[in-house]
Length: 285
Image (cartoon, rainbow, N blue to C red; front, side, top):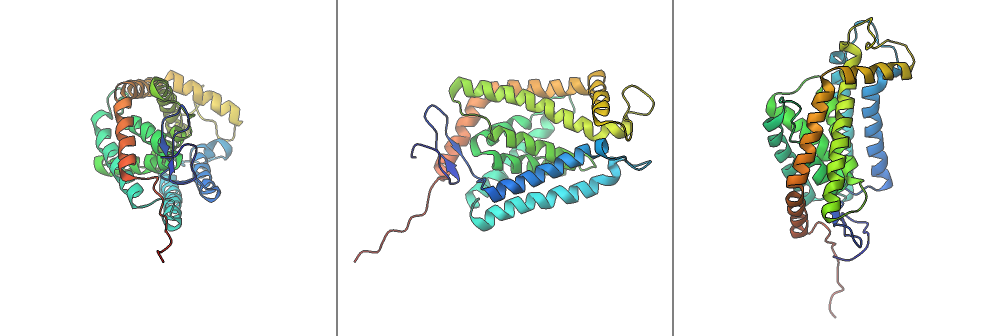
């Protein structure tokens, strides 16, 4: 493995930094596709703050359209990588393995005081394999776990978008190694858990907080005024305690299991030779 940053699927370690592999390379075109998918996700969550919903409208109505929007964008990102050689069969296999493990981990903690065991793996895999891989892994893991646990509902496209951002952000963290890397990932795990909860609260708050209270969504009101009510709603309800439980779970799991999982993911990348390049030598005379 050569020193310096590489442009291919494998990004070797910089001096003083742990090795990372870019299984999904972010060229300008692919970065634009991810940005478009993320913008669509933001629009899914925030459109009630910018537009006035029709009377009686709820996310139960628009969730199928949101799912129909985000899933093709995700497929476009992966299909573009496959077509242009940005992700090969070994990377697809790793994506499938990580998504399957995450889907199996989720039922172990979901539904108990905010303990959710799926997100620490998203953070660690996004860290090792890069932001593009983390984005796709977050969405596919939540989709697979929903099928496994019969958790398909109007919340699913919002969960997929928010989890994709968790994996994306992990791949964008600055270089670090050793204990400093684990502490960095633990801090990110806590912050990303709170951010995930923030967005997931936002998806249902406009339609479930009731009317005429200081915590209620007011259709057509100023964005900052509604955001203030939303923050107060998050603090005043049990959702913040649930988010804190998720954050603590991430910190504990990353601190305890992180070094071993990071080593296993990097060992798998080395043995699979994700950073290998095909070279054609001239034929002997």
